[in-house]
Structure formats: C-alpha cells, structure tokens
Length: 253
Image (cartoon, rainbow, N blue to C red; front, side):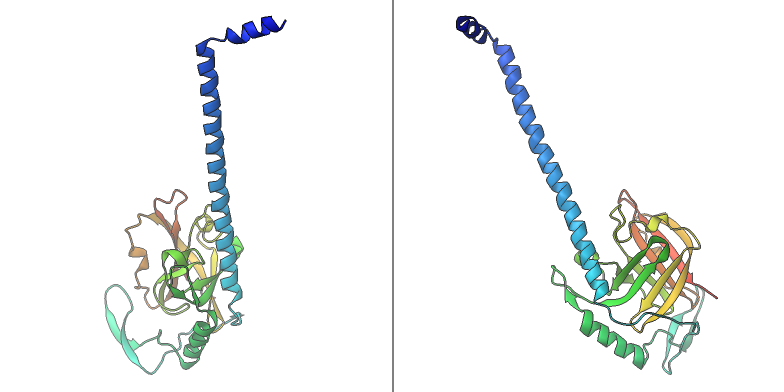
C-alpha cells in the first residue's frame, strides 16, 4: 500500500505542481489585498469618526446662548461707508455690517474661549452655529477655510459675519454618509437653515435655489444681495468632481 501511495505522489506532473504553486501565490496575494483594503476602509471610517467627534467638541465648546430674535431690522451704526446694494449702483450709506460694541465683545469672547490649533498649525475659532432641522444637522462654523480646518467642521469661505447683510458662504465636506454636509444635496427649495451668531441671535434662512457648478466657478460667492442677508452652502457632489451650491435668503415672517 505504501508503495502505491509513494508511486502516486512521485507521478504528479510538473504542470500540476506549477498550477498548485500559482494557486497558492494567487491565494496569498488575494489575502494580502483583502487585508490592505479592509485596513484602508477601517482607517477611513475611523478618521471620519474622529473628525465627527472633533466637530462635536467644536460645537460643545460654544457657550453663547441660542435664542430666537424677531428683529428683522438692520441696526445701523453712525459710521458711513460705501457698500454695494445691487448689481447696478453703489450708494454711500451707513454700513450695516460694522460690529456694534456688543458684537465686538461677543467676538472677543468667542476668540478667547474657542480658539484652537489645527494639526497644520493654523489657529481657528468658532463664529457661529449652523442648524438644518430637516437633516438633524448642527455644527459650529469656523472662521476660516484650510484643508485641515475643513476636517473639523464647516467653515466660512467668504462673506460677512454670520447674520450680517451680504452673502455668508459656508463650506463643508461631503463624506457620502450622514456627517458634515453629506446630506446637503438632498435639500430642496423651501427648506430652512438656521444660523446663530456669537451674540446668540438666530436667523432663519429659506432655500430659494440649488445648482451644480465646476470647482473654478465662484460666482455663487458674490456679495451683491440687494441689501439682504443671504447664505450659500458649498459642498462636493457625490463623485467629488463638481460643487453643489445651496442658496438661501433670510426668511420674512
């Protein structure tokens, strides 16, 4: 019997041996690739989790009170500057965006209490809170946009202070899940966005337009708002090729 088994083992052809070797090599390569892909996925998900936790910390660090204001009038200051009111003309009027003494104190407090340093070394602080009730979304708005700061929370890209006359442009990542601005492309005209500034004033904005542009197109950041308060949300399309633009205007009661 042993002689028969030994005879069969010695009779394995070189071709069969080669196929077995190829199979083993392919198996180990496939296993390594699966491990690498799983590790990459796990790391990506962990990074998103960490960024979401950091965003929560940003939000939790804000201690100015959030309260509804019924005041829709712009409080003008005594200093006059030239501001653009519409596409066709400019007028010398009292600047509605100049900070009052109360606002100035609130900003100093926000800077002192919320300033942190990103991994890149950039310092940032919180200038407000954005809430979108439909998406159950609430994040702090950071004062400037860099690659590292964008990983922490939505950021101000361009425009005035929150709830000031003009077009406040806020940028946020689309991670194709429920975090940051991932669900912003699902909004529709008529949906509400709430912005709370450092004084605790909350203003509701109603979406009136949505569209997609190429990354080089920055026309949505124009500050020509006919003297109205507006906000623009900017995020990536799901394929990260273009940009989703969401335009909203202060809701009139």
